[in-house]
Image (cartoon, rainbow, N blue to C red; front, side):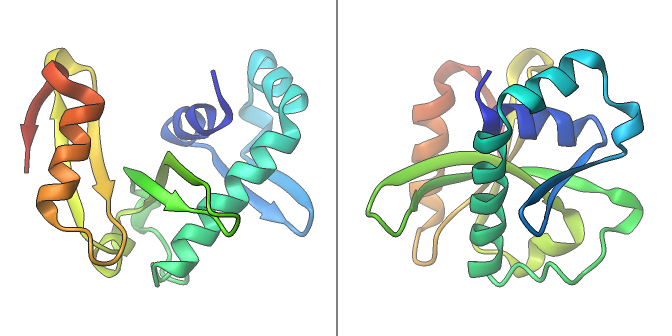
Length: 148
């Protein structure tokens, strides 16, 4: 499992990952399992980089991170083709407070067949809904049940 997948899964399980200065903070740390602790220890640098990248994307999208999540209600979003300063493009999943979604860029919701999950895809400025739907179709293909 890569770091961004781990972040998506652990935040989906009710944990929060955030930077505290140069340190990675996981809360509630007391509820981490031994395998989760081991993964964090073995992939700390990658996790820090992924959390910083996620935070940078959300800051640049005027996501309104100052809005506290209502009842810790978070939603999974897919951030496609984010352009890094060095010119590389990366795609990753992140969870954000549902209360922030209205202030984010173009969002398309989707569901996968057979209860395999779903979520939302977040586009860059200027990316159309059609382009986001095409990204979902390319990524999930026949596994897509619906797109809203």
